Image (cartoon, rainbow, N blue to C red; front, side):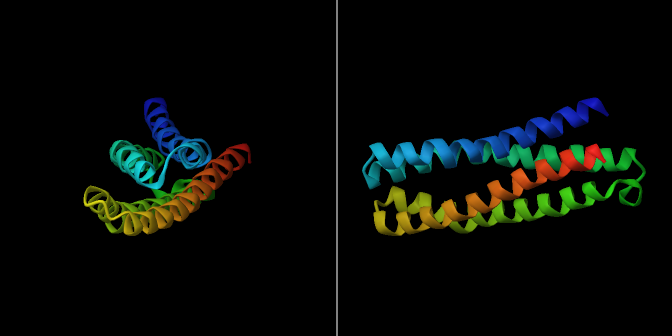
Length: 150
């Protein structure tokens, strides 16, 4: 069980920590130092690398999470915070899939074709959804820590 908890925790740290870094450190620094075309190229390259890690984190979260639920005897035998964690985690995954397929893929194509205005609009939409997912991720961590304490 400890190995699966560790895998789960590492996957959370990669995903939520990556969003935190991108949102509160990388984004302001990029705005401060780069012109829009260079900034859009940077984000395209950052997302290309980070999103591979997110896909892996999602896989690890699903496998480790459902296996731990199985070890406890199923959803009927786990605490309420596990139900909340699962529900919010699935919402985060759906938001990420929307960001990836509906926004990032077109953003990357627009950057490749130097359509800066279209790419910038997509980046703005991605930024807002990353803020939502970051908030959900932090809320889940808080909720789980409170759930463990009860």
